[in-house]
Amino acid sequence: MWKEFKEFAFKGNVVDMAIGVIIGGAFGKIVTSIVNDLVMPAIGYLLAGINFSDLKIVLSPAVYDAAGVVTSPESAIMYGNFVQQCVDFLIIAVCVFAAVKFINKASVLGKKKEAEETGETPETPAMSAEAELLTEIRDLLADKQA
Image (cartoon, rainbow, N blue to C red; front, side, top):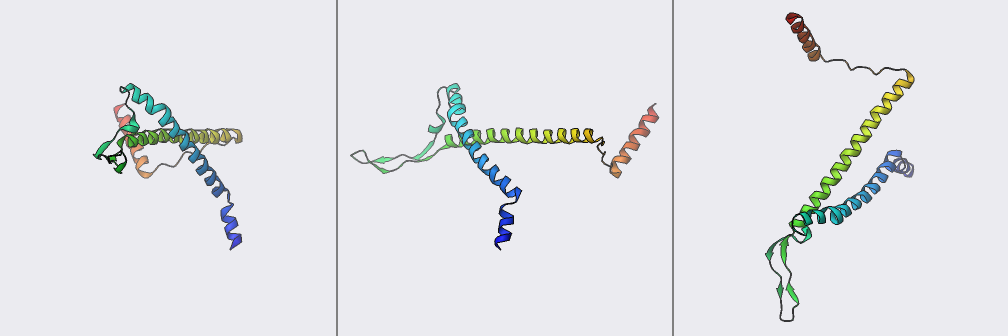
């Protein structure tokens, strides 16, 4: 049982996934800082000094006693935090999209360069029956018009 666990735990894919999770967590903190410390204050400034973390809908205000101590806390919907989290998500989504697009393009270029070095030509995929039929129809129509 220990041997099976070792094989599972130390496979390359598991280690790669763990590294990805750790880097993803750190990246999330960086993006959260960018959103909270750079983007949202700039947007707030452009919108006449609005602080998004203060935006809320108060359902019931806080109740204070004679000494000024809170006896019942405020109940509020903090939609400003929701807006910040949405901006945070959009920035992460754009970064992940750009990274995946870059990796895919690099992979295609790498395969293309490798094929050129070995002298292999990339195989063209076989056309489906429908594609062949459409090609024949296109050719017949072009012959008819000519």
